[in-house]
Amino acid sequence: MAQEKLGVSCEDAQAVCESVVKTGRLLISHEAPLTNGFASDIASYAQKECFLKMEAPIERVCGGDTPFPHSMEAFYLPDKWRCLDANEGVTAVLNRLRIALDEIVPDKRRYQREKYFRFLESFIDYKMETTKYLYNDN
Image (cartoon, rainbow, N blue to C red; front, side, top):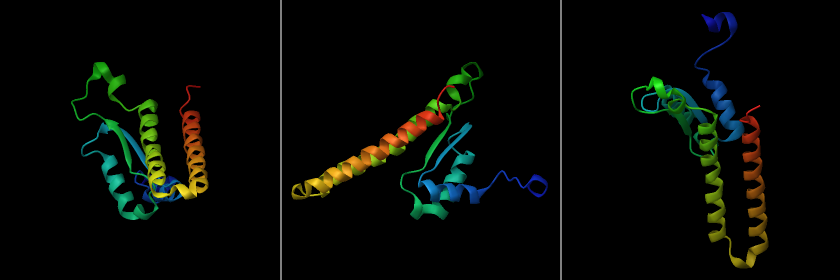
């Protein structure tokens, strides 16, 4: 009904795929527990449809797999800091790539290796600055 009147869908899979194709990454967050939550359905769909476009593993930031503790709601529910930590995990993939490049590229091609390292460092710094801007307290 909302989709017909407003053009809005709670399961807009096409938008998720477009985002994955654009960024190569997917971070899903919701308040429900990690196990059997809606994030697993989104992740499985994205993995099925966009696998070749993925540059990093899918990250899910969700509530814990415990009964919901109302008195400690602030610690239980996902917040921007947990999303930021998950994003740092995604950029860790690039750090592992850098280590792999160090092993793969021989010493006689040191200049090329350093060029790759500088590119990866600038990319990681850019991603971290972008994330800090998005999650800043203002």
